Image (cartoon, rainbow over all chains, first blue to last red; front, side):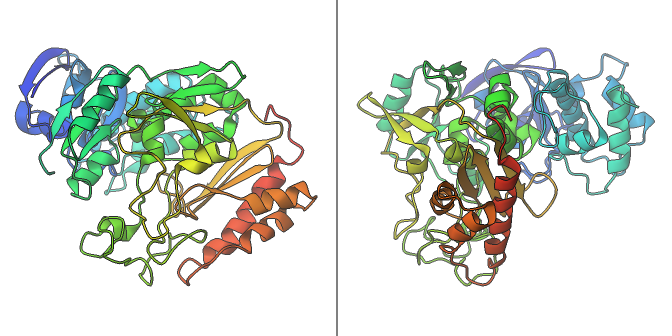
Length: 167
Length: 318
């Protein structure tokens, strides 16, 4: 089935078996291996990408449903040789060990910071009508969809604080 | 995944026609549950009708002073809506208690209602399950699994409905708008959408074949406080082992039955002047546990009483 979308600013056109997930299309057909397949069931967040600016699990989304969408993966965040501020913060804070979850953590952080900038609340927001303040508790709750089996969480938290201008 | 064909209609009428055309066809919205179950071959649709781009993605005011949540509004969109946060805080809390940020960005209002149980034996295709294979038996009964029903279970099924959002919608007396194959719209009370398992646990809702949910309608917010509280095995991103929604003296319990469980005995006791603990005690006399899930009876009594206590005397602006 013919499907076209914008991937990291470039037009992309594919002929897909409808069974192909967005994650498999990115990795196996287009060859962008940055988005990772961890659990393949939406439980680990390693496959997180941005679709029309919002973070989703690419493993639970059929690629044919993304006709016309704007998709950003970890490969599309840097501008030439200049890292995205979230990438730079993860490097500065050493926010990884094995690195397998890192592309998903970074894409999720980019999406999460936009959600906070848009005033979205979380479960730990005491006053649903107040302005969003990204405390450590808020960051942990908002990032709970991204697992790190090396448990680099303290450094990931520090990197997100840095990237969000909170440190 | 088993092979299937895919179509993306742009109108409700086309979607209804397309799903009726092919035996075994299913509607696809966010896909966060259906695609996962297709990978496991627990769901094997022959044809997917993608309703995610139908013009059902708005939150709108109703003439009655409530809100109409379009079927394909995302969980994130509804929870972020300022009107929901101010007037229906229990609903915003319930949605935010569910899943992860990524999943809430894809999952839809109607899809959330129609998600399937997370019973471990439903997911384990090496074990019998009457939902997967009617008549096969239920491995959860007597199995090593605690997150099972304490209300309304049957000899065929002790699974629970996993939604947080639906529990708040039950307490808020929401209505579900449905359009059928004849093109006629009808309204179903949220409490009547899901059914108890009985002898046919594979039939989970009162929807007719080929019917499409088009919206969930909230009546004007009730007087009195609202709250949603969820207990789970870790601090975030896990299904409930027990949950309570309170909205203006209406009480619904989550993770205790095949459907969001409206605590009518507790509500009746409250109306007669019972205190929160007495009201929940009245409700829990109807609970039946089987060993592994005994803890739920005490848990729900205490959680319900705590929620009722915290909302007692609160105004409608809470």
